[in-house]
Image 1 (cartoon, helix red, strand yellow):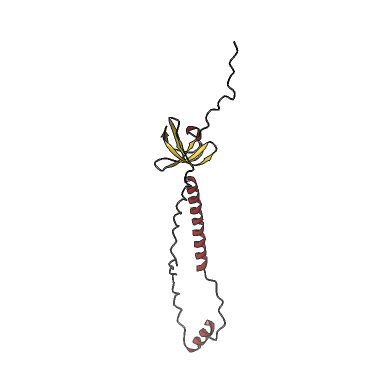
Image 2 (cartoon, helix red, strand yellow):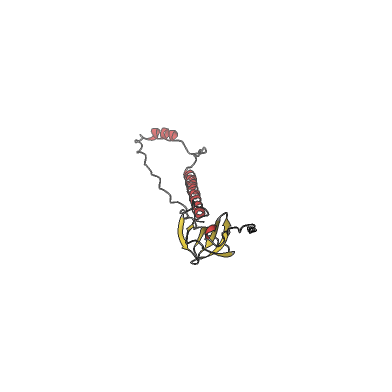
Length: 172
């Protein structure tokens, strides 16, 4: 269950990063303004004005161009933080009860010896069984924790088969 949560979280973070970079790219592209062609106007051009002013009076040198720096615009919307994941669905109610028959048994995160040991329980402990996967049982302990135990360590283990036919006594 924890591994599923971490996998979901990693996938959600990857998606969040992808969405963030996509939005940054879109906002950056939106700020670029296309070059606009000016429509012909009835106003005189710079050359025409210079010709007219040469005839009237001498022209003083043009003042140096004023440098303008663009002012940064604040982002329209702050980035949203991801919503916390919904709480995990409650486990189905236990279908049966079993007891530990070994002196001690490991509790694991998943059904198999490749899963991490998260605790141990002693002989006689009652366990509520949710599901079975192969030789493993998904159980809830008396304190409310959930874990996986090997079936052979519980009272659900298959008892040794009795001999099929009792031996016949030999006649004397």
